[in-house]
Length: 400
Image 1 (cartoon, rainbow, N blue to C red):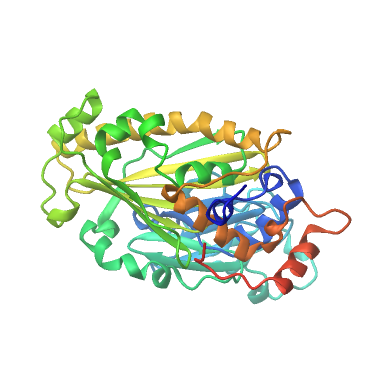
Image 2 (cartoon, rainbow, N blue to C red):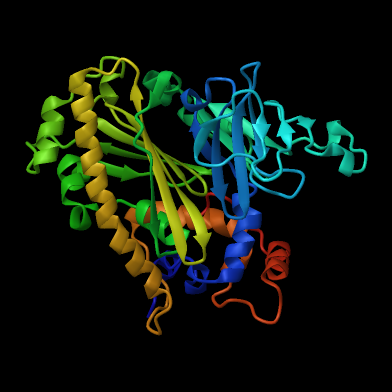
């Protein structure tokens, strides 16, 4: 017989949530369009005309520095025929943004400057035909955008509980280490996030990471859209080459308080972003869903401007540990995702060490209460089923 405690732990998402195309479309509208998404660090867009782009779900975003030094966010969408107005992850528009399709020209503040063969168009009010803006907010040098109004407050308010802890890292004055990556996985984005949201598997699946801090790793739950996890370095001599040398070479980071000189700190921003603060660098990663069964995990590293050779070597070694961990996680993600289609799959049971998964799923159900259905609703549009579920359920954020 299942006990009450056992029953309460079976609080994972239903299997259909990991492969439903219709749910993916709903997530694009209700989740990725309405929650903050990380785009770049300010150092990457500090010059007029410098831009960075972000594609997520059905949206295409553009952050660009104006002639006045102000960062602005826009849909990367020409008002003529919908072409992208800039291409690539990053770039420079020297004087204006010129659409590569037909040559419509926009000022760096997004306003319409000129139309190729304008005499062939009806008279257009230039003030109404500029690039469409999106919300933009900078926090400690990290630039976020939001495509549509959503339930979250501003990024600064969301991450305010961590402001004092983050301040000594001086992230705003860091620069990109030019080692951004994008890796595609044949799995639903939530399966990727589930693996990352708990450290219970570290001793078994990540020997190097366990060698570094596995005995002293703590996951805190998502509360009000944010989470925190801490890995304090083990005191015993490391066994793995990368771990032994990392701890040996890492200089004492005098800019950090003693409590943070020997730990890796992770901050999660719902639904799909993680910031990692290390003594030698700052990392980030986020899931960019392509479809119900394909996900890009994007990541990168920020370094200190005055990085010493010793710190650079330490950063290389921490990156090596991270790369090994990512490779080890990749297959776990695929296995977990494919299991949801098995006839033997009847949900998951969560340990008290997996509170990150439980609380993340609670947040998902708050936005998408249709996920409370054990089977995918049939005979009605999923969006309508979600509206009906929202009317029916009173589901509180942060409650297990």
